[in-house]
Amino acid sequence: MNGAFSSQLTSLQSENATLPVCYRLNVDFVNCVGGGTPTAAAFLTKNVVIPDDCIIHEIAVCGGEHNGVVTITIDSGALITPITITGTLGTNFQKLTRYYSTTTNPLQMLLKGSVLSLTLSTTNTVATSNVQITLMLLSQRRIA
Amino acid sequence: MKIKTTLPAQFQDDELLTPTKVNKNFSYVKDAVETVASKRYCYSTVVLPFCLGVTAISEADNQATRSFLVYAPITLTVDTVFLDGALASGAATLNVYNASTGTTAPTGVANPIITPSTTSQTLSYTQSIVIPAGSTYRFELTGTAFTTSRLDLQLVFKSDRFLPASTDTKTSASYTPVTEASLTNATDFNTNVTALQSAVSANAAYTNAVRVEAYSFVNFATGTDADLQKHTVPLSYSTQATGTVFALYQHAAYASAGSVFNTVTATLANAAGSATGLAGSCNMNGVTEAVSIDTSPTVSLASGTSGAPSNTALDYSLTVANNAATNCKRSTVWLFIV
Image 1 (cartoon, rainbow over the protein chains, first blue to last red):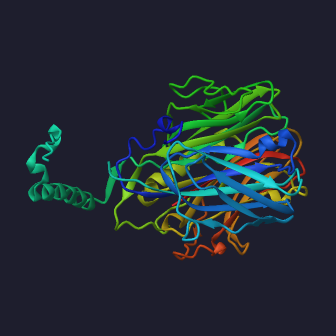
Image 2 (cartoon, rainbow over the protein chains, first blue to last red; image 1 turned 45 degrees about the vertical axis):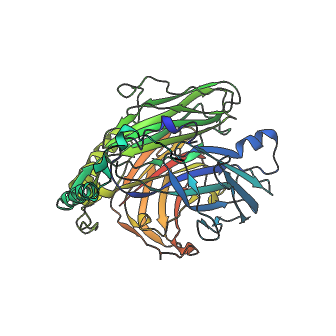
Image 3 (spheres, each protein chain N blue to C red; image 1 turned 90 degrees about the vertical axis):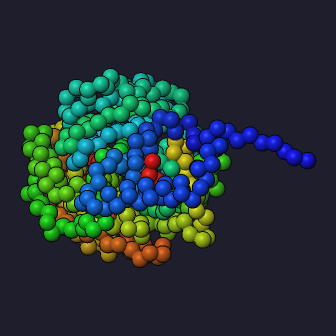
């Protein structure tokens, strides 16, 4: 249930203290080509392995040179309800409205070792654009 | 009907369920907490998982080698290395070296640590790699004909840290910054790494709670991709996100050496766009790779108001600018925050 990589991560095995940690995962998409050829489409999904049991705290998206609507879908198989963030990025660097776990966005937990996939789709073909996604994950560990 | 049940042996001890026994257990926990509180610091192995930005390490940029430097102001352990993606063609290997230059593998590590294939998958290297405080290790992908591949590198770190007692305060007043330096070679760099490490070690408050964040930038040049040179540093409204940036470390690389004389500058600004005094310049000076450290700033990252998730003013922007038309292939910036 913890995913294929849980046993490969040793990060929780030796800790013995209570400490809430908000750590982040940065995922960069560069040269985002929308509409995509098979090659381009293969570049528009990235997978990250979750290093610790955590909840999804915040998600921030920014980018530049895009001038189109971008949609990021974040999923982890059946472990979470997929999160979709969408918005328009202009030609200048700017940020989308940040995602938070609130009463309207249910609190979701990710398990250590699970794989989170981030898929980007766009409405504009701009080879020099980029989209940067920051996942802020909150981990609360217990005394062993 | 009477049902006969037999409890397992460990549950047959009546004392286990008596109030006396329960109280003893609580007392044990309380004593432990009090013991901890009586000391200024409780040394503990605290896992600090964080990850180098996941970014494609080869996307048609015609480089046979892509390297990422990992600088450790405190001893860091690379818990696990993940490489996700596939080679479009050709062959490649992921190696780790125990310095910013050279090809010596860390003790106990046999290169290559990961050999990607043309099958899309997530590969891992699970043997811990300890990076001593003050040193720099290099993760490098080398290969042939893999320029259109997507390979995303993810490093999961952990660190041993001191846990500050609740009465401990983290202030910048007692921190003596190291003289800022812009460096062009490994010798100068190592000298300043030592100085930075000494400064960190000399101040317990900084050693206790240092937070490391890494950002990657790829493929940018002045005049063409100006809007691609920024990366936001979003802050949480939890207390974990506040702090002071006390050092910046940058590694930049160009496609080729030559007569170009330029710099790659990293700056941090608040939501209003105001410079905050943090700047680290990689003086390329005709070399293909350079590193720099800025240890003089104490940039305060403002805290948010709890429960104010719509306050995007808490975002800071980290900008890496290239002052020449020559394409800077990549830059990795590390922020050290307490």
